[in-house]
Length: 289
Ligand code: NAD
Image 1 (cartoon, rainbow, N blue to C red):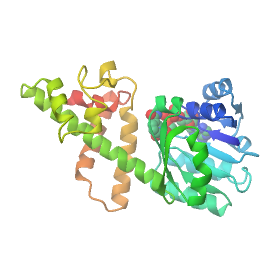
Image 2: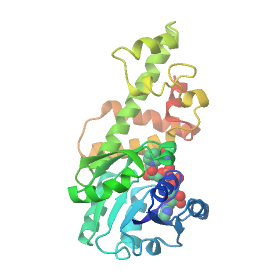
Image 3: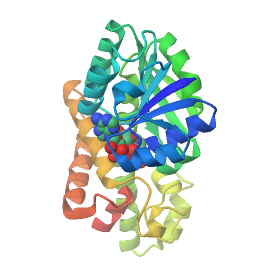
Image 4: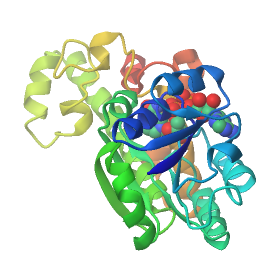
């Protein structure tokens, strides 16, 4: 297929390269010269404007920083310049309302669109092992699915427009809570004189079992290998977790959902990020205990 890719950063760069590897012709655009140079080296054709990159394509994939940018790029550059009937796949993590709004405007302009945020970080983007949670009509999903398969290991239809973003922020809100709970329990066990590795062995096979403990143990030299064993470098940055928690808190307010525990987790990540730890993996929050 002829596919345009907009936003070739840490995530988008690898995703676009995987589309090339799968045999697609990829027209790439990013505001960054460096990102464009890398995309060119990976086999993409590069353009100096999004409006030019989308000319003549069958699909547009975007991986951009936030909702305001996604809305601006689609409404000002993509609509009207991409051929009528093209399908749009926005893989960025953005707020549910903007995702629904842009989808509605795309439909009115004669296009099909899905929101398809991802689970998995830069390594999964490079390795083509992302999980996509997709919001949109059945017809839009069916057109997007094979393209997403070329960049991921799992593609799940979550529901109508915005449902992908809903799944993403609820998942990451839960992740923040069980990470913090895991940090608190591990540190308290240690303070009470229990060897952290012994606690890991017991709790990871008991009802304390959870992903943060079992698959991403936040304490160095304990449990499974994780960013904790690498000075909390790499992994999922605290600043990105905070971005997702802010989106989750906004969505909780708009949907009148009570989230007292998650709100506390969001506060703790605000403080941790504010203390200059934004670049550290989110499991580094254990250092505050
Ligand atoms: P990034 O900052 O590395 O990449 C974003 C890219 O978009 C940059 O190259 C930037 O130049 C480009 N850009 C910004 N405005 C643009 C515009 N108007 N037109 C064209 N290009 C523009 O960010 P990232 O880490 O690749 O994240 C992208 C998205 O993926 C975000 O929504 C993020 O929340 C989500 N995400 C990231 C991770 C991760 O681990 N990095 C994991 C899951 C989801």
